Length: 120
Image (cartoon, rainbow, N blue to C red):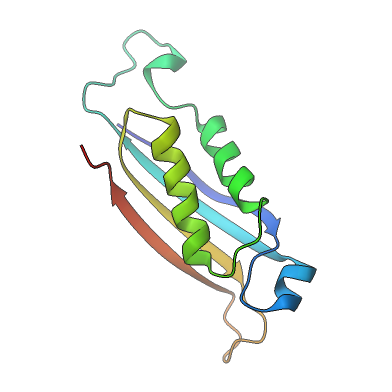
């Protein structure tokens, strides 16, 4: 089973440059988790899956939390927390996009995608 969040947006104080951290930047995050194959929703109970509201809270807690220089660090911190809080998650991927300012060619977003499997 897969559970996902797409395009969750927030303002975060992350970036290599001081003005990025001082002014804040708009971020957008996609998160996908794959659950243990034994997970199912036959009982129609939230405890049988991962509550996407809790996943959203992880993204926001990390994204609006302590400032980091690299979005790679931000993305990895999000995945760390997902694996720490949900033992049924076997695989997760995150895409973190940041509004680009001052980047040659004026791209709409810059970002990273990271995939990770739980080490058993």
